[in-house]
Length: 279
View 1 (cartoon, helix red, strand yellow):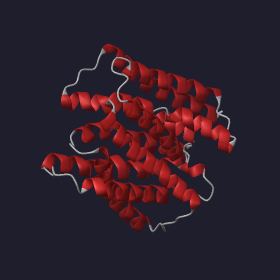
View 2 (cartoon, rainbow, N blue to C red):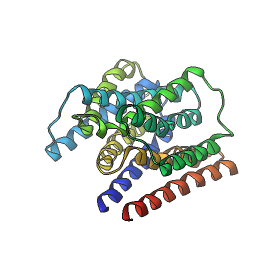
View 3 (cartoon, rainbow, N blue to C red):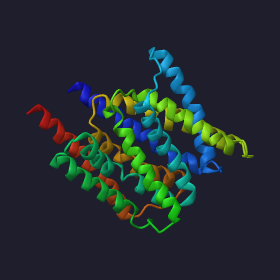
View 4 (cartoon, rainbow, N blue to C red):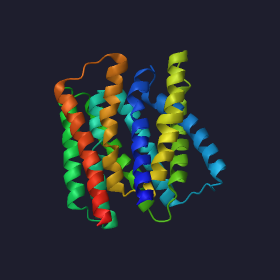
């Protein structure tokens, strides 16, 4: 039980760190692929040091590579979508991940979600929709599609532990390597390397990608994929709140109501799960 609670806390902290993405990406005047390439170069270095510190042998097989593609897809598609559609559209469409986790669990792992999982998923998604209902717009069609595909890839990240012969931290490392290689041709074309973009890039690489994924991987060891994806519901709420605080973008009462729904739903879900596990 203690391990389960610690795992859930790790996933929650990972979501908080991921929420830095919108704030920092907004501060970098680069192409989406350039940003993703730059931050994952830094992240790959940090995760490489973490692997060496833990004495963890880096592995690669087809399932680990599949996980790496999910990590790459999550990172790259989210960064590019942010430049093609609104930030609100991107985050709300990416947070379709819990729905895809449930679908993938049923289709590929024969894991039927419980009523509590489904109810919590509906409440969290409802809160996210409330949060963005005033700002969700048609945006760029391509950007919206890419954000939705990012949600599918993000669902794969939550299922890394369920893949046969998996090694999630190796998948994260190789996913960052793929992201770095894909972004490098775009990165070398950038010209603005002033202090604010560079500082934002370091924060993204060290905290929003590397440390967040390390915490996520550790948390997923004891946290079911559906639970983890729902706990991560704090990310699409915190992301625009941080942007609003630092860039003075207003948040309406409906948005605050949506934020409250998400936070209350996540807390209630975890309390009820703890009660289920102790009875």
